[in-house]
Length: 270
Image (cartoon, rainbow, N blue to C red):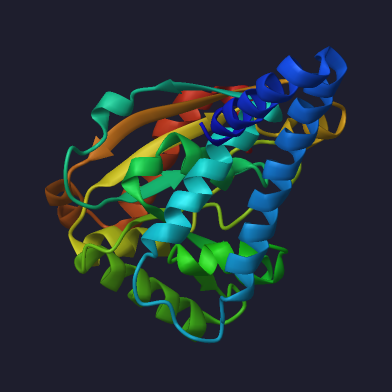
């Protein structure tokens, strides 16, 4: 873990200083060194983001930006006391790309999925507004995340077609929240937009159906220095052959039923 590596460097410097200047000097060296290394990493992240031109289409998943993202999430989530319990990961495809669908009730959901499924190179379909977010927007761009205009069907179709290309060309797996975003603040599962399931049909890839639980209070918990215990469950992987045989509406209904059954009636909207 990145913070652990930084701590080892700071500890080595502190021991060296401690032998010559005593305990308090060693403690100051450790704390100061750790803070300095973390600041250096943050400045490097800002430098990476400054090099990103979001007006230039990103053709491939950038391995360096992907690695930096994984390292930062691996380090930051434990500090924020976000604990993730993972179930059913053994069901995930051993090879090939897939479309991942999941319920959505918190801004922390993509971060938790990215951290939990780091080796699967997830590229999210995201609302356009996220592209302007500090640090997050540029990093999303380099990770092949695709922005969707929900108010313009023609522009939304272009996003869908681009996602199909990404899967067909084996560039990344695509993740989408089929509810179309965070519709309310009740944390409940809402109806799906079936059009996104066309991505799996046209790309001829399986659909990974999963749920996230207890993510609604994550942001508030961070602000109040409270721990968050989140659960990620992979419910089922629908084979590409089955996806091709069914209509998108049928697939959407089936995925919704799987999620609703796992979440329980108290977390499903009428």
